[in-house]
Image (tube, protein in one colour):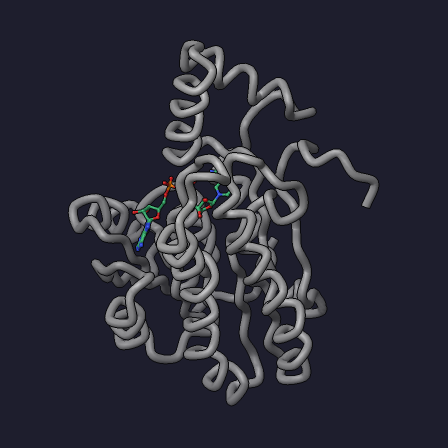
Length: 258
Ligand code: NAD
């Protein structure tokens, strides 16, 4: 399917690997020039090499997207993006009694205030062009909490509330804002979470992974390719009427009717 976005420009945050990379790759495949970022330069430059083969312009910005300077660097590299994919690392798992104020501030900074800040920076340009697509990578935890991910549950809920209102304020300008909610996907993040599950329950890594997979009707983890293609569709011309939605990609893991 022609997504109709060839020649557009995208900022894809936190994209040297994992879900962010999946989105950058699918957008590059659709002919979109991508600005990618991560904190580690070597991994980022390897990622850039993988994306250049699609014949698009790839700009790599080595920065921490959760900092003001990192966000400024991204906008300097791509001042007028047509597409913004918000993403950052997720907070660590833990227990309610151990989370301090500083832990909440870090989670809110990374997973709520950073995307809000970038949305505010790119919206004026998108509104002026009467076209824009913003996709926030959030989490299945928005719909169904994972108890050990209380920091994530809290921060993502805040962003979801902001998007629900803001997306409706800007829709008339041809700009859409939506959230993509990953359930378990096969990335480094899941390797880390399965390792901590294995330690917590004193079981092997494989047993932890198998037990998590058993909770997913599809019986497997999602791939970054599936995730990226869903993101690219939301960024396409075809999804111009989709506003303020929370799209779950979880192999059926969240057991709900609607
Ligand atoms: P990942 O660890 O595989 O990849 C994270 C990417 O973000 C890497 O490229 C890393 O370099 C980059 N990154 C992290 N923090 C950054 C920062 N401050 N500045 C710049 N770059 C940064 O993780 P993933 O699985 O792709 O997860 C992406 C997001 O999706 C996370 O917020 C995670 O919590 C959330 N999520 C993932 C899953 C899953 O199953 N993988 C499920 C639910 C939610």
